[in-house]
Amino acid sequence: MSLYSLIKDPLKAISWMKWVDIDAGQLEGAEKRKVLIFPCSLIAESSVSNDITESGDVQREDATLTLRLAWDATGSRTNASSPETVQERSLAYTVQTKEVYELLQGAIFGDYTSLECGSAVQEKNTDGLVVFKFTFKTNQIVIK
Image 1 (tube, rainbow, N blue to C red):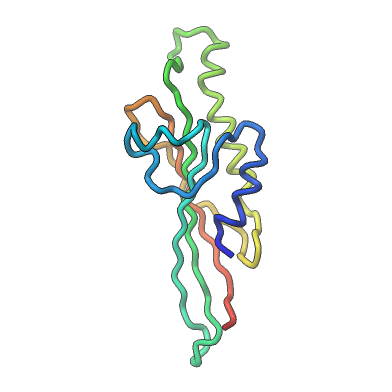
Image 2 (image 1 turned 60 degrees about the horizontal axis):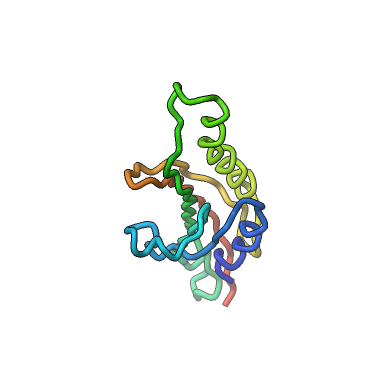
């Protein structure tokens, strides 16, 4: 079973999450973005299998899961001159990002080992979106 299939339901269960999907470049361009509802989670995965036994009947699958969280920040005001309540509302994504990290870091899904976060960065963005990208590593043993 794919990692996407395993983590989409726990992500959908987050009360503020409006959209969970495979990352097919929906954030790259205004036309593609029209299909999204914010805040959203876009997931990409890749894996490499290596034989553990000489016969190749047992393999270790090393997987990378990339999760991009996105919010429409149009009209957001985070500058120090904005009223505190406006700043808090505009910075809600920081709390939500931490919530997703805590959901996934160390979690075990299916036959995979626990997810380990290798990086967490806010992407530079100039088109009114806030995009935060996590990269998690995991693996599983596959017996053929």
